[in-house]
Length: 76
Figure 1 (cartoon, helix red, strand yellow):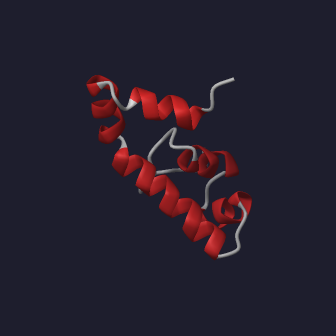
Figure 2 (cartoon, one colour):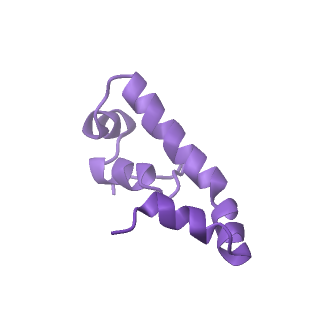
Figure 3 (cartoon, one colour):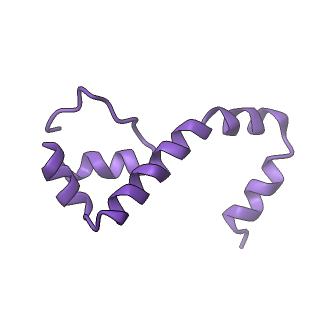
């Protein structure tokens, strides 16, 4: 079975894949910073969500890179 890391290395040789991957660099960096800050604060996703006035699922989506944080994020 192929490992994702090994597949990624091969895919990075494809200019189209590399361009799309590079375009997402800022989003990857933001997700990593969110995870690192939350972990350094010793908070769970649920605890962070409560402090921010949102839901744990929202924090999980941010950390997973599925959506970008917004200053307009509500309870949902």
